[in-house]
Image (tube, rainbow, N blue to C red):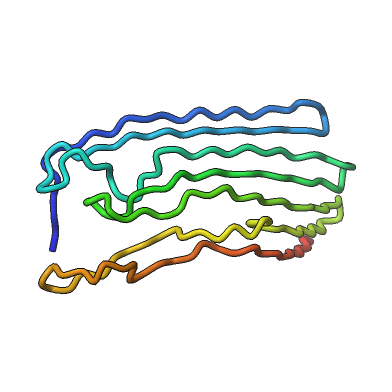
Length: 160
């Protein structure tokens, strides 16, 4: 089944700033805000678009310990977003913290150790409610995709 919205509105913006605080330290930050609304769409007039988080924020920095070694840390926030046009199901808002340690030398060796979601935040980044062919819903989350847990990894590369 394909539904088409007759009219809708989107309004928002993004502001990002990045700069070198010193020769060794660079910082960044960004914020994005969006407001969405169906104006003419069956029974969803006035509802927000699905999957459109109204607010995202990120900030972080990188510090060069030596010319070969650097460390970076970033945090990001994503506000909950509706998962359906009826605005009855939302994913989870979340703060995520990431970090990495990098070694890169002039001989072409790159070693990168990283951690994602270091606080091991548990969150759903997608939800969908089951509805059968007759439009009947049992009233529970049928599908929930859990976001990536705390993940640690390493990468080694040698260029010749």
